[in-house]
Image 1 (cartoon, rainbow, N blue to C red):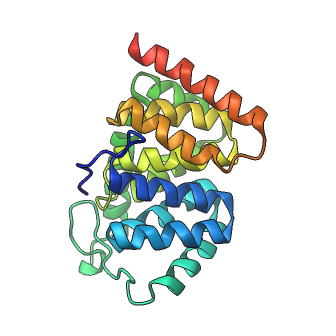
Image 2 (cartoon, rainbow, N blue to C red):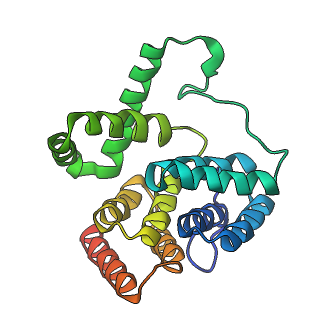
Length: 225
């Protein structure tokens, strides 16, 4: 995707459209989601909009994703994306064995997760394995592999969208991880802050807004140092 035009808020125009979709999606405010989906349809490719709605099931769940895609389909009924490329750009209908595909997703997931978590990657794996080994496997295979390593959207944009969603929902440890993850993936600090603020527009309390902004300042200081 091409994000060559920065906006006044510090985030590239195409990325901004997708970040705003992610924030409104997490808010569960239908009027807001309809508005930003309409704006995104006019400024970015439909396959990108659908991709950020799809990835949201990892953070918002299937019910929220089904709801949002239903709204999107009512606004853009003829824009259904029917291609399902794997990570090498081939069609999944080409007959690749399920075991080979799972191995591809696992390998890609390990690489993406390591990029997002950088020096904390091994610690993350140990902590999640301690919670449950299957959760660790699903995180890599399903989350970072099958979903977040899809080629449609670059990783910095995906991480910015995740930041926006988590800013709305208020999962503080996960927001902390993905604020750092967005920087590790290559997003600019101004972009990360803009994504955070996009989500905080829908934050339920002022207390959470202040905590989230303080968290970002802590992450930013460590990043600069």
